[in-house]
Image (cartoon, rainbow, N blue to C red):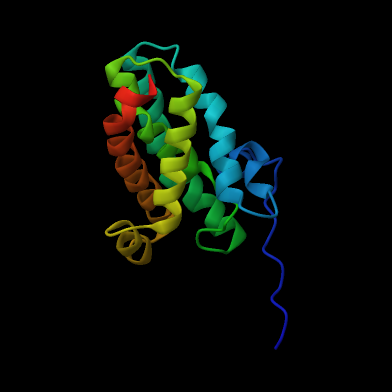
Length: 166
């Protein structure tokens, strides 16, 4: 059994790699997706101070640049969906909290923990059609689509749980 070569390292001086790797959070040696989601939490919290249209616009920008950002970094590294690319976690987490923004609910610690946990569960388990899409959609869009749908699933459950959290 031959050992696998180490995954290529991003150039963290390249702004595209820096963003795709979640400001460096994707460099965590274990569970980079979880660390990327943790790194996205302060961004989400800061965005809660914006009016609804501002939160939605910022979320849309994160989503819109994601396929290019993730795709370019993936091409540069020569690895499709490198585990350290966590911009998709940033986008998925923001999608998770859209119901909270729409309802104007306070970003409490309980809401943050439950939203984070729900997103991670759906991102890791990939229930249908998340896993199906993850296997069939390629490039930067493929990197993003499973996390966006995980965010939708998590957002729906967070909406249902909100009366008990705020």
